[in-house]
Length: 253
Ligand code: AMP
Image 1 (tube, rainbow, N blue to C red):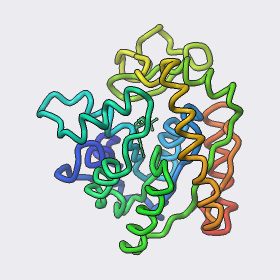
Image 2 (spheres, rainbow, N blue to C red):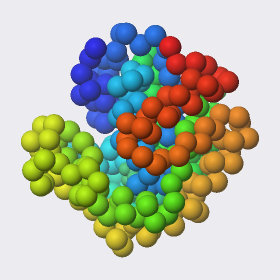
Image 3 (tube, protein in one colour):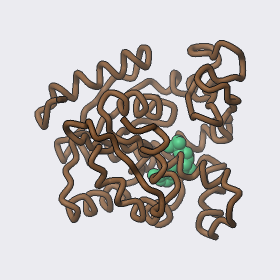
Image 4 (cartoon, helix red, strand yellow):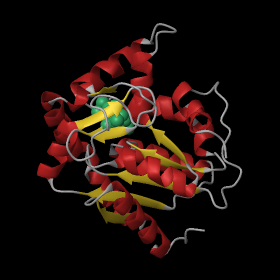
């Protein structure tokens, strides 16, 4: 099994990075995770990645990596994208699509993929559909995580992320053993800029306006799998795998 770093490097660093997918994947699962910000898509993507062997591809992680990168001057499009991100607003489709398109090799990965945070608009969903058709890739399922709004706001405001390994905690529901320090790697835990209350409101509005319509889009394509995002992360993951096993498209091998 290759390391997490290798599986994610190509996606995070761009087309020049090499990806070494797991050789043991029996079937390449290709999944999209949908759901409002804070519903736990990132946590589920990480758990599903371990169970299914597919790469976890998050567009938000690419923007955050670009924001932290000190190596070279970001392009004007990336500078503008990071400004949208800090405010909690959606980055324009053209910028997001350029970034995804130049990572097409990751979508062809023989380990499969779990898309987290992409697509987020109908335009992005249409572009992805076209690209997958051109590449003759099929989508196994679009998992839609469902949770009441009040619960989502609580999850977002208490969320803390490790700056090194990206592990996710919650100040009361899933605290680290030592406050502010990651249990896994000892990295510093921080609150994402866009998890602050003023950005959370903007992100929820963007979700309702732009991303919620994808539920209907994928419902019509017959690939939507609604999952209740209640309970512990492990319970939600087990529920997801069970639903994937029962989905008409394909059984988990
Ligand atoms: P996330 O970690 O998925 O919540 O993404 C963090 C932020 O990155 C979002 O609030 C947006 O500003 C930006 N972003 C990530 N993915 C997309 C996308 N597919 N379309 C537009 N903006 C995105």
